Image (cartoon, rainbow, N blue to C red; front, side):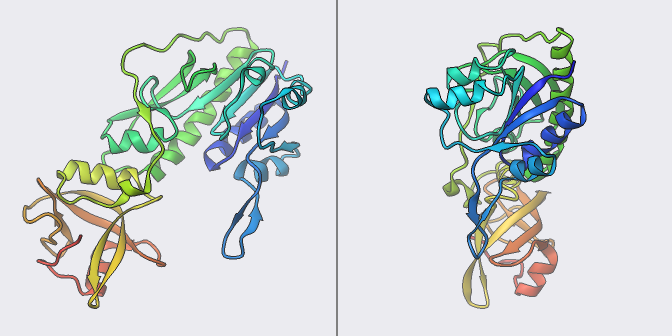
Length: 310
């Protein structure tokens, strides 16, 4: 029989899984999401992507500010769910919630656990230069991403793949993996194994201070940092354009050839020298502008070999 599911998620990453669970025929009795937030120039209240998608599917949406306390637990138990599916929800789940569904809570996590537990696993994997990552279905327990892993799907990380690129691939792969896990759960065949005790790393939340490019680092580090922070918050530097320093986001790069003082533009590509090696700029974005091809930007901004990025 189809499972009674409470879905808990908030951002774009969660939506493919919500849709896939619904399409698989499971009964989503409720969706929990973060409440509408002010957004845009007019600061109008904007629904989370999960709430917007749930409403189109006719799923009732709840957005409590906290799940602590007996009142919240009683409301959650009233859904009489077989399982809760949690994908980037944004609130910690107390034990009263974790224990409420018949089969507990399954979390979809975007890393190869126990590597990159925590808030920013996709960004941190790319910034560290990892060659592969995974989506994993984990049975939730009280600790942060410490529960046993029930199903995993591994994928390579391309050498020029950005967080935006990988985010979209993992969202799709994760949806299929989670639906497979629910099928196994429905059949009584979902087994979960404890995570290894070795190899634990934590994917701390991205700090905006990390986004200022340090051209003194080696080329691989610069390249991985840029693609790991793309598209948001976006790694940035400053360029002197028309006699004024202007902030410039670097969205895509590739490893280049050449050497020079860190931050120096070496050629028309444009290639920029790092502490060791160099990177070629592929896509950039001026403040208030749209992403553009880097060589065209260089020409339009009047930047030339020998100019410096800071």
